[in-house]
Image (cartoon, rainbow, N blue to C red; front, side, top):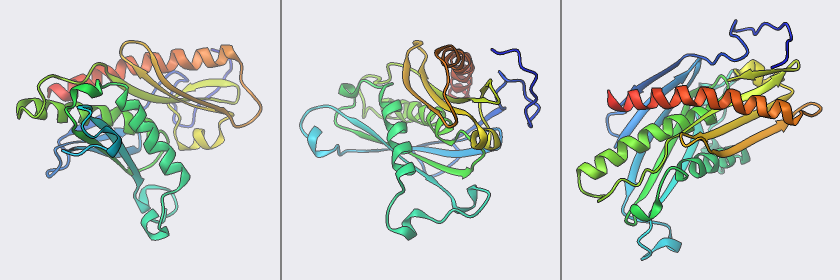
Length: 244
């Protein structure tokens, strides 16, 4: 990490993430749910199951996982119009929910889902940066809780979860590599990156974009190291929440 004198508005050190708080079983009617708070970012994650898979998987014996993502109108600094009022989802929303789906499918052996389809819903109630990574981290928790229920009810014979998944944002601001960007940092960053990482130490997906100028391979490796260390902490938090 560069030896640059820099103070984040939040007072956090460059390699310090925001506080994580997770409440399990937050939604009464959901098969599985949690509220995940990362700093001022809050996302409600729920998981449900359907005995119906996409048409291309019919009679294959294989299951599927898909995700939906949305932001409440008052979740941002200025009111965000409901996408239903526009008649279509934005490109950003589609991109994020596809990312969530891809990331969580990486933790599953879909052949063990017995033609069940799992749906993960992520609804942002307060946005202060890192909503997509919070959704993935919380999404894996509710996926695990749902699978536990399906095994208990004998809708599944064997556990399809093969890995643990968490995600975190990083970036470069004023030349310094930072962990877990809040909204201000995310809006002004020179490089914005999101990392989805498995407990088996593999990268699931890396989204890294230079908003201003460019960044070096050395800087990218520093961001990967920051993200990997934080995801190790998130894995422990996820496991503790599930055990509660």
